[in-house]
Amino acid sequence: DSYPDKNPRKIGSYLNWVALATTCVSSSIFLTGQAPNPLALELSAKSGIVAANWGTWFLAFLPVGLILFIITPLLTYVFCKPEVKGSPEIAAWAKDEYKKLGSMTRSEIFMALISVLALVLWIGASTFKVNPTTTALIVIILMIFTKIMTWQDFLANKPAWNVLTWFATLVPMAAGLKNVGFLDWLAKSAGGSLVSLDPTMAVLGLLLAFCLLRYFFASGTAYVTAMVGLFATLILQIPGVDPAQVMLILLVPMGIMGILTPYGTGHSPIWFASGYNKGPEFWKLGAIFGIIYLAIFIVVGIPWIQFVMPLLG
Image (cartoon, rainbow, N blue to C red; front, side, top):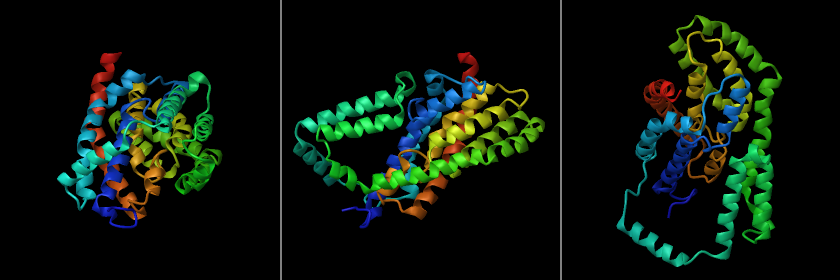
């Protein structure tokens, strides 16, 4: 009995936020955890900094990822406390509902196969030369063709159309920052001051800027496209640092910083559109979790990366 418009704090808002925050963490753990990650490495390499491969990325974020996975449900319990603390009836109800589901239906089998196809095409987009938008269209066509959903279902999915409208306007606005010369101005303004800073302070300054600028971008992909080249240029101006190590420090927290806003990463608008965490609450929780996540990354992640990177060569 917990719905977006009725008793959301009973347990729905808690579960909703745990789901969002956990997927943000997993987006940082794996290089293939979100689309912007491999794109960022590709753009970094084109700018002259080869930062990591799949294994290096995984090891670089592993200790931070384990900590965040453990504390995320606990933090959410503190800042978005559910009214339902636990009940044996819940477990019994879940078992009964699972039995009612029965064996997998034809539609469910098709949905599983289509999901695997979508993941393969998404992860291997550069290898197969398939644009992510093309993959999305293929999935929609296959879902309708196999009767998993009807065209009317597709048209009636208001949250999905809401997300599409958000991205159709916000992504071009983000690209506009580059078109009007804002990024070039920022590089020239910040570049000179970086040379005079202590290398540690310069890296921390770049990390904070790289994370906070996420507030201005509609998605991780738009952000990476606009900012990675700029920050690669700034990194190369810092004397006495390993550019690959610094770039990795900037890139691996990209997933967890998706928690900041209801438009910060691809799946955020979906959770926001569910209505369990309203606008003010969403922004407040995003800021709190963003600060905590970033602090843990600075305290644990940066020293770990500085230790493990030289060992990996």
